[in-house]
Amino acid sequence: MYQTDPPLSPKEVLPTMYDLKSEDPGEPGLPDQFHLLQPRLLDETFRPPNYPSDELFTASDLNLYYDPRHPLWYKRPDWFAVLGVSRLYEQRDLRLSYVVWQEGVNPFIVVELLSPGTEKEDLGQTLRDVEQPPRKWEVYEKSLRIPYYAIFDRYKYEFRMFKLDGGSYSEIELGESRFWIPEVQLGLGVWQGSYQDVEQSWLRWYDETGNWVLTPVEQERQRADQEKQRAERLMAQLRSLGVEPDNQ
View 1 (cartoon, rainbow, N blue to C red):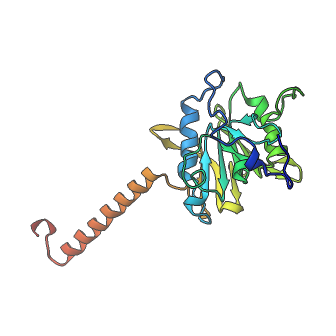
View 2: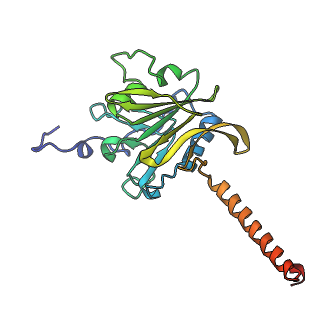
View 3: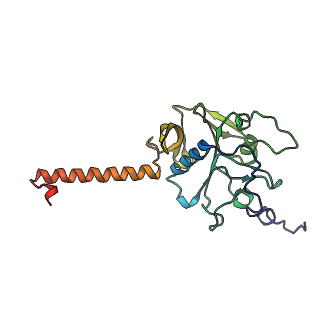
């Protein structure tokens, strides 16, 4: 390749998301139902009050291309969030993948859903073959330096949080399976409840008052309940004045 002076930036010379593959039918570990529902709940409740919605990008099971020296290497987090970028690629297209040298912003937090087949890699307990790309833990910690790394065991419903401290991750001792993240004015914790008609423990976001952030469906139910309560109060006031609402 012809070298310019000054050299062109990686964004100008390396592959874009349109050039890189976004799926591989032969890749093992295709998502099961839990891997579809849990990231959706994280999406629906991740609403940092200090960021407008058009400056947040979240994704699950999306190729994350991270190394401009090896542009075909990628990881596929179960869920991740990026702050300060548009929901659309260059304000116009839904993303096929997330390419850090094109975006210019690394993920802020990544969540991996632990299972027996992925546990050792997700926890950084596998040895790297020098001829192979680095494992997830090393990529998140060393290459992308993602500030927060959350792990949720889908079988034991155990939540672990790691925070980047200097050049490596340190595990945070959690109280009541909750962790507050000041940069987004939200906390992440384990909630016992029904989501999509499935009752179990889920990982979801909570606000500064300690209340769980409502999903759109929960917000609609709350509005309907509030309207019903206002109507009932109005009817009670009318009856106290001697007016029967049903006759009006």
